[in-house]
Amino acid sequence: MDFDEQPAIGDLGEVSRLAKVQLQLQKEIDKLEEALSEKKKQLDAVQKEELPTLMFSLGLKSFTLDSGESVNVKHEVKASIPKANQMEAFHWLADNGGGSLVKNEVITSFKMGEGEKAEELIAFLTEKGFKPERKMNVHPQSLVAFIKERLEEGEDVPFDLLGVFTFDKALIKN
Picture 1 (spheres, helix red, strand yellow):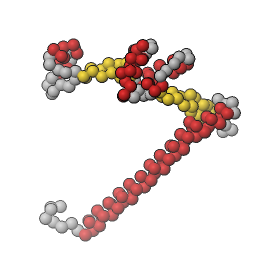
Picture 2 (cartoon, one colour):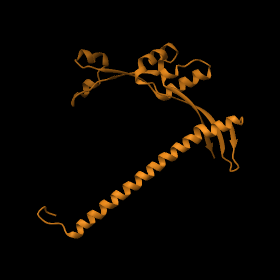
Picture 3 (cartoon, helix red, strand yellow):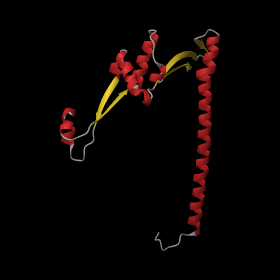
Picture 4 (tube, rainbow, N blue to C red):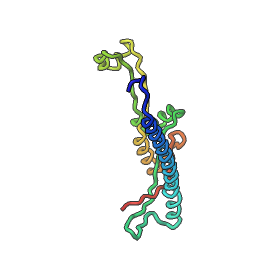
């Protein structure tokens, strides 16, 4: 359609109808996402608080339902080193047998056509005028495995420094 041509009234009606359909679908999706979020919160409360607490109060670590599913309470550990504590946490890990968890990354940028320079060793980058950026990190799953091992051995772990939190979680399997 040329800009000089006027759209037919029926075409504008269809645009209006489809825009209203889009708005209605978006409203429905928003409601469903809100309901899903609420259900996830409810599941979290039952799975991480109510069911484990009740089972422990009854002296149970596992249970089999009439329908055959098994319910087990597993002790979970999660960790994420807060940015504000990173260097202190890296030093603690190094001093306490977890130094191999700390990874060093050297990052630099190259312009198009500098592919050969990108392949040079990092030691030569400064000499060539590049300013590499050094970044240290710990993979979250490696950190969790390290912390679990230390806790199982009865060793102390600085929870705040390493961003550690533990919880019990009920898992149901067929």
